[in-house]
Amino acid sequence: MHSTPQNHAHPLGFLIAFGTGGLLALMVQFNGALAQYGNSLFSSWTAHATGTVAALLFLLVLPRRPKPFEPRPPAPLWAYLGGVSGAATVMLSSMAVNSPAGLPGTLALGLAGQLLFGLIADGWGLFGLPRRRISLRDFAALALVLAGSLLILLAGNLA
Amino acid sequence: MSPFILIACAAGLFVGLSRQLNGRLSLSTSPLIASFWNHLVGFAALTVLGLVVGDLWPASAADAPWYAYIGGPIGVVFVALSSWLVARIGAVNTALLIIGGQMVCGLAIDLLQSGKLSLWLSSLGVVLIMAGMLVAQRRPRG
View 1 (cartoon, each protein chain N blue to C red):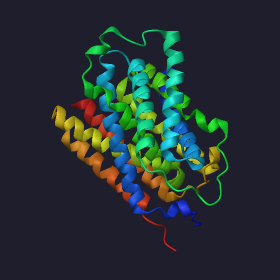
View 2 (cartoon, rainbow over the protein chains, first blue to last red; view 1 turned 90 degrees about the horizontal axis):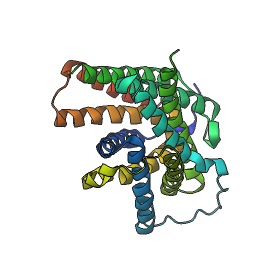
View 3 (cartoon, each protein chain N blue to C red; view 1 turned 90 degrees about the vertical axis):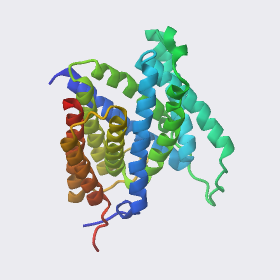
View 4 (cartoon, chains in turn yellow, green; view 1 turned 180 degrees about the vertical axis):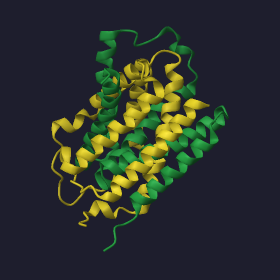
């Protein structure tokens, strides 16, 4: 089977990715606490405001990496719209949570949506990122993680 | 199909889209700069939405404890790391591992907070997720 450089990712990258998910769990926890004092729109709006300030501070404090020898081509304008898509997520997921889907249903369907997008994006190399051949191994990993996540969501719902 | 199912699925699709766009931006700038733009542009979009919908600043907002406000700075690190990852290990792997990490850590948080869990099911879930991570990170032979 052909393998692009992306298939040779270092195991460390996978640990970082797992830890990134842990950060997300923490973030959801704190933003959820904030939403209790208002609503999900207020919580997300505030988190984006404090996040913008924090990002500026990080950029000021952290050392800059040296400029690459060859100047990189500038990003297309649409690449700046990730935040709009994030804002849309906030709106859609709070609509879904308050629907018959409920919180576990929203989370489970959200996972399915993310993985579906990932398969399409990797398969076609969408939005300027490298195309990545989807292997049987990817599907096996996907099935295991999805099954495990559904069990955890179910367990939370039963308790 | 119920419209709610579509809406919940679309929320997940937009998470992936956002990650992909930020990943592309990080290639031309840096992951931290991409995270900065993500937050600034998202803030602008939510401000417009809040002005239309109203109730952007609820009366009880001032009562929130300080720690409720650190979700934003954590999000900056989260978006920067995801932008870095998606350009290197691909969208499927990034999504899989972030979901796995979120589930396992979310479980730990629940356990610490309430201690109420169906331990059997959740342990089996953790084992399946770990197995999925191992499968994903094994290098192809040859």
